[in-house]
Every structure is written in C-alpha cells, then in structure tokens.
Amino acid sequence: MSSNSELQFDGIYDDLIMDHYRNPRNRNPISKPHIEHSDWNPFCGDEVSVTIGINKYDRISGICVVAEGCSILQASASIMSVLLSDQKIADVLAFFEDFKYMMDTSCLSSSTEVSPEIAALRTIRKYPVRVKCVMLPWVTIRDAVKSYLS
Amino acid sequence: MTDGFKVNSIRKDFPILSQTVNGKPLVYLDNAATSQKPQCVIDSLSNYYQTVNSNVHRGVHTLSQLATDDYEAARSKIRSFINAGSDQEIIYTRGTTESINLVAYSFGVQNIRSGDEIIISGMEHHSNIVPWQLLCEQTGAVLRIIPITDSGELDINQYGALLSDKTKLVSVVHQSNALGTINSVKEITAMAHSLGAVVLVDGAQSAPHMKVDVQDIGCDFFAFSGHKLYGPTGIGVLYGKSEVLDNMVPYQSGGEMIKSVTFDKTIFNVLPHKFEAGTPDIAGAIGLGAAIDYVNDIGLDAINSYESELLAYGTAKLEQIASLRIIGTSSHKGAVLSFTLGDIHPHDIGTILDSEGIAIRTGHHCAQPVMERYGIPATARASMSFYNTKEEIDTLVTGIDRVLEVFS
Image 1 (cartoon, rainbow over the protein chains, first blue to last red):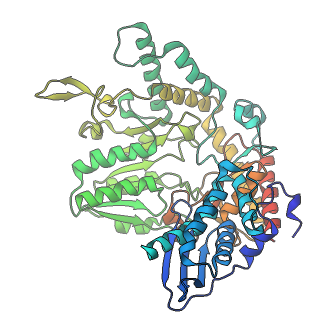
Image 2 (tube, rainbow over the protein chains, first blue to last red):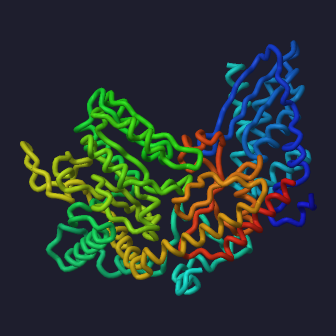
Image 3 (cartoon, one colour):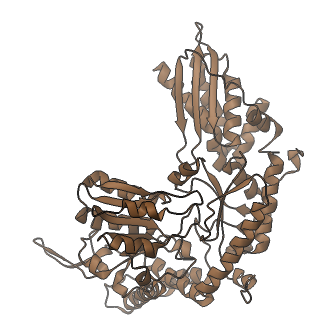
C-alpha cells in the first residue's frame, strides 16, 4: 500500500487504524462472561457485541469485542478492547467519559497528550459523520457496564 | 452521447455544480436522494417571497389573488406533467412519504378490514412499507410481499399467485431507489384491478426521469416528491382518481379543507382542497411548477435517452473493476448504480470518494429488505441525472481505484 500521507483525507485511514481493522484484537469468545451486551446503529446497520470476564479484583480479565461494519468501527472496537484490558470495571465509565470528551468535534484544537491509538481515532473528528462509527463500541461497553454495576 | 444534448450548457443552469468540495470539483452522484436545483427554481422561490407572498384561497386583495393564481397554475402544470384527468386529482403534500401516509390513513382505515390483504414488493422504500405495516396492525389486515429475482426484478408470477379476492390494495414502487429497476406498473395495476384491488404507485424515483402517464398506467394513486424532480424540498404530490378521492375521508383537518363549519356540523371542501388542511407550502408548489417547466423545456424523452447512455457507460466502466459487484442488473432500469466492492464497507467507500469531491449515497437506502435479499448490510450507490457527464463517471472510477489502493 502506498503511504496514506499522500492521500487527501488527512490520515483518517492511517497505518494504525488499518492495522487494527485488518488484525482486530480481542475477538476470541470469553467463556462464562460476566457481561454480555450488543448494540447497533439502525441508520447504517453497524453492530457491536461485547463480552467481558471480571476477576476477583474487579478488573477486566477477558474482553471480546466483535464489530460488524466499516473499517473505522472495527478499528475503534479493537483499540477499545486493548485499552480497556485489565482496567478496573468501575473505571470503564470514567474512561468512556474521557474518551467521549476527546472525540468532541467542538474541541478540534485540543492539545491534550494522548496515546497513539486515541490520537488516531481523534483524527476522525475531521469527518463528523464518521464519529458515530468510532463511538458505537464505546457506547455499547458503557451501557453494558452501567447495566452490570446497577 | 446523444446528439444535441447540451449537457455543458445545462450544467450552467445549476449553480451548485460549479463549486469545489474538499478542493475538488463537485461530482454529484446522489440524485436518487435529492436532485440539485436549477437557477430558475431558486429564482421562483425568491420571486414569490419578494413579489406576491400572501395566503392562498383566502383574501380578496390583489396579492392573495396573484399567489392563488400561481399556486393553482403549478397544480395545472403537475396535472399535465403526469397526464392526470383534472387538476382536482392533484393533491399537494409534503412529499412521497406523506402522500402514501394520506392513502394509508384515509383510504386504508376507511376500507381495509381484518383478513383483507395488502400487497407490496420486496424492493420498497421504508416509506412504502411502514405505513402499511401500521395499517395492518390497526385493522388486522395481512401484508403480502412480491419477491425479487436475483437480477432485481419483481417476480410477476409470484405476484399473480399472491393476488386474490382478499387483496384490497397493491402498493408498488415504479423505479427502485436501491436497485434502479423499473417495474411494469401498468401490468401490475391491470392484474390488481381484475380482482377489484386499488393500486398505489410510488413514483418518487420515476417521475424525475421518465414520462409518466397515470391514465395509461391506470393506477388509482401515484405519489412523488418535488425535491427529486429539481424542485424544492417540502412539496410533493398525490395523484388520485377523482372517483376514489371523492369517497375518501379527510386525512388532516383544519382551515382550507372545509366548506362550512358550525359547532354542530362541518361540511368538507371539494377536491383537492379536502385533503389540503392549513396554509400549504405555497412557495414550494410554485417552485415545483418552475421545475416542471424546466424539465419540459429539455424534454423527458431527451432526458431519458441521455440518462440511459450514462447508465450504459457507467455500467460498462464499473463492470471492469474485478472486485465490484453491481446490485440490481435488470435490463429495464434507471440510471442507478448500486454496488459493493469486495469486503470494503460502503461507508469507507463513501468517505474516500467524498475526499475526491464525489458525492454518492452509502448505506441501506431506507430499503433494508432489499439488502437482506442480497445478503449485504449496505451498498454504495451512484445515481445519475441529466446534468452528469461521462467525465464524471470516469472520475468516479478513478475514485474507486483510490479506494482499492487504500484498502489494498
């Protein structure tokens, strides 16, 4: 593949995104999960299902995120699964809120230092219509964890 | 290209087409979603508001009369455009969706009973599915579906088998928005009429691109939208045979649609006003009239011929792309190219094409049963109009090459 930096869409399909799209992490089923939840976007048909195993320290011991849809959705799901592995389950909601703030299209110039994965996803804010593709896995896991904790 | 079809001159009538998008000349191939507007339509809206703005059918003052004249003149243009028998058979609505809902909630609630059957097809837009589902829930009627063949045509034999004396209404699309297929609505109508069922034809995609003659088709209702016909958004049409409309109850109630009101009794107005409660979209109606004038000046035969050539050219070009699969390959179709590209999601195709200034539609096109029929979540759809060019199709092909490069 040619370097995407030559292309005109400001790196939305950069190497990190394409790597997570082509080689999605954490898609192996979890045996006896503590949390199972799925969601979908009726406007485009994108689907995400999340299963989570939790250990005795209330940390995520196993996570499986299966996303069916565009490359951005699948990359976001994969990145999320990596970032949340081994996190305390109670911290997921705060993690979601931080991520949601970072994806806010109204603060494009924000210079907060973030991981390369988050930075790659933030690039997609230049295409507001695709931000919903990024957000679907995160909304799904937020709802799943909220329901589990309630 | 068709001799004498002056596409370069026509393009100058559409101011939006000369702009750049993402630094590239706009290539607008989303005409099945909505069409662009010629300057004369844009001018008709501003002229109305600048010179005659007033309410219709109400005032004795000059402006009200002028507005009413223009509003009703547009109705006559629409009648002539689809060869309806009289102006009173042309009802202004907000668009195709409202036209179908009008029939469902008026004719449907009045005439459909438990155990009756309504037939639609497997290639309907959601707007020609959901109103009938709701009507069936309300009345206990049953919805039957005409299946689609692999090439994207309606299975007429299956349709014949579905028809029975239980069938009270058949509602089918004239040209599919997702596949481009043009259905034999005249034959479908005759078959339904032989069993006493009434027929609605969804003409949202056909009216902008081919000569429609509702009397020749024989349908009881024909619905279409102004905005796909180079007119404004917010205005649409329901044609209905006057003998059918006369027997229908009003869909909405209020001013305009009444002849007299006392607290004891209301007498409804005559057609078409019985179905036009409240102040209508006067500017929109006049704008649609201007759009029809514009289309008539070019000529629907010339438009249809030119768009057929664009379709043939585009089909041949896309067929050369190995991983591309065209969805909807009927030999009788409008200038719509719905396709998938290997396992690349249509949204990714759409975003990359957008970066090249190319506007296409991606998704299920409000026709999820069609996607299910072909076992796909979505398609990319390039839908053409008479202001598109062969060069723009070449640009689309270059854009698709770029998509393949990114996802190689």
